[in-house]
Image (cartoon, helix red, strand yellow):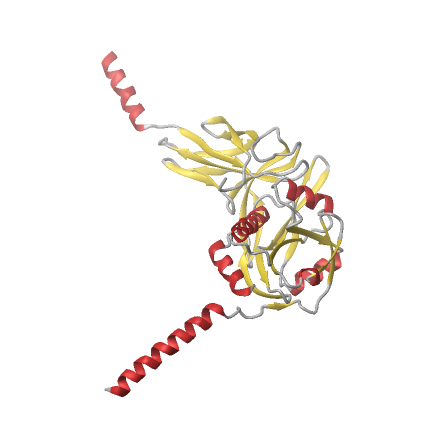
Length: 199
Length: 137
């Protein structure tokens, strides 16, 4: 009878330990960018070393192109809503980044306009572009695909759209990506929960 | 005979509604950029219809598109005509059917509005003034 009680007590104890460990431990590393240095440019035309310049902060990272009418604006909007909620929680150790996979068209000026028309403060939510090869390397390391296609000619100007990965990633303060979500339809409650485990 | 005609017209009225376009909205975007127009088509008639085109003066080109998923990636393709079954609702929404508004002539900022003309095979042209807003606003 006594040993039975002991087994029950130990079982409950172990359950509590596993529960605490499960809630507080960081998710596994998916992509390690901690030793990488991608030289990019932000929407103010300032050079940014990614991810080094964001070291010490958890980064909510989206991948977009500004000519996208449907999916990418949803990704940016989702990140904005996550930011709004985390700002309310006082999470000043989290920062927000959108990287363009269309550097040919997404100049710093275009990125600034994309942010401005959406009322986004680019001092807190950073929009990055850069050299095509550097962007390609970052995309490869994050397992992001962006293939140009579906070309349309409007008044003599050729416009193209991408078939692309739809992604929001969460990078820890050391530069390691530990969570990935579908960018346009991310469950923001789950995303915030993961960010709070990672930061 | 006259009474019979009135009764028939009343019967028709009670059975056939109309085709309506509602709940339209446009995502904000800057001049020269692209955006999307979303809305619902409620076909309360007994007859199927087809949405053939959408026009607007706010952009250089307007096309109906659908978002698709392929090999884990997202893309868009043009759709030339979209059927609207009788007694049904067709929804243009983020991540699905949308009207691609390409190369905007002016900024479309939050709080502004844009006019669109939807051309249906049977219902003809229906004009809708859509607010510019972010989803959830």
